[in-house]
Amino acid sequence: MAPLPTSFAVVRRRPGVRGLALCLFVAGVAATQVRGSMASPAPCDDATFLRRATLDLVGRQPTPAELEAFLADGADGKRAAAVERLLADPAWAAHWARYFRDVILFRRIDDRALAMAKPLETFLADRLRDGVGWDGIAREMITATGAPADHGETAIIMAQMGETSDIAAEVSRVFLGIQIQCAQCHDHFTDRWKRDQFHRYAAFFPRLAIAPRQGQGLERFEVVSYDAEPRRPRGKNPDNPRRGDLEHEMPDKDDPSKPGTVMQPAFFLTAASVPLGTKDQERRGAVARAITADDNPWFARAIVNRLWTELVGVGFYAGIDDLGPDREPREADLLERLSRDFVAADHDLRALCRAIMATPAYEAPSRSRAARDGDPAMASCPQRLRADQLFTQILAALDVDEAAVGGAAGRPRFGGPRGVFTQVFGYDPSLPREEIVGSIPQALALMNAEPLARALAGKRRGSPLGRLLADHPEDGAAADAIYVRVLARHPSPNELQTCLDHVAAAGDRAAGFEDVFWALLNSAEFIHRR
Image 1 (cartoon, rainbow, N blue to C red):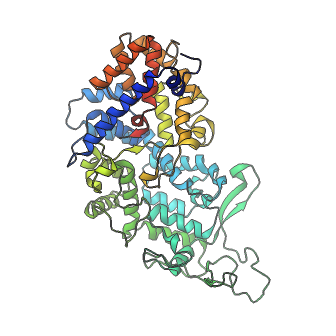
Image 2 (cartoon, rainbow, N blue to C red):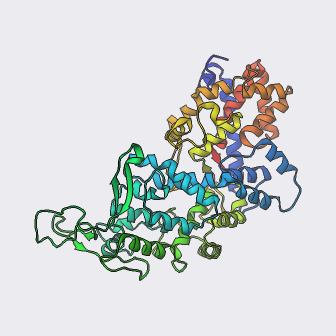
């Protein structure tokens, strides 16, 4: 092959690989169409289930050894056993910490908050690994103080740069799934929330501040409670009735330059409130308890809807974080049952994952959104892999350790190769799934990445592909091994024959299998969890 054996270069130099990729793609589309025509869910095949579950729970696809052991296992309960094994893996906590890291930091109002990626990921992974409930995690984040570099729980505050209304809105979105910020300037157009309800709720958050300190990066800041009066002057008028910024004010709608109305803190979903003058930790503690209380159903519904959407592909609500009493969910009975069980399990996210993954919907074959008939209990829809999943999967497919490409699993999100990759392939996991699509820069990055080209140099015996071809001198076995390595499944007879025909036509075994590897690595199946 040419010195730069990218798929793009291969297509230009040897048109046959284009035909190979097209054949493989058409086979995948046909399979999807057949699955989509099914009237009711039937269990997917074992290879699909194991790849799906492994990607969902620990952020990578199964190794060839794991796949073969699973396929050879004849026990009736092997799927449940695989889920338990994955839930017990320390990688489960790290994977979901990255997920919630993205949930919080993609809605930042200042890019300086990206420095919170590593502290937030560490905080979340530690809590999840220790079995802390989602309610406990929420309370820590809502009431957080301290130096952000050492306290990842301050991430929502830092992501919103200490702004009262923005913090209140994000706390509601992340932990309640309710977009009450739409009522900040006017009564909500489509939900029942009134403007004064938003500002009474925001009044729980004005007494926190991001204070400057000496140091570099995150060390320059500290999230503190500020209860001293006054914090800073508010105009030159000595008769100004406002209380500094220790209390939250609802601006005058007609003339924002006029003094606003001081709001007593009150939670918009329950009767929870505190008096004016209440200190920061007490008022934030009060709203944290109100949000996570067992009798507040929206706390459980929000995380159930979020995880169901992430694991199954279509949520109970149209929006992952746009719930509320004025929006009708699909399959309301199932949503309520999962929510009650989640509360009964002390808000254990492992238990919630286990419950969702035991449903027929999770085990159903992948179906397109157009074919799912709008029923989340009857669907398992393809999911585009998040950046961290895809990066880990590429390394696994190439049998390359992350440290070998200049990175490390513990590096900050936007440092090292993983960080660079995330800047290209990252997306907000709270977006509706139909809005998450690939881009030209992403396609070019996969087709033209030099580290991938080096790894797939089949004539170099020390390269991953070179080692694989040396270990499998028979072409059929080599093609099968590539499929297992890249897609975590064995090829169909037609796929296998297509690969063998292409290798034979290429006239060069190494070059032909480079094309096969490139075609699979750039396939829709590889970059999706189906």
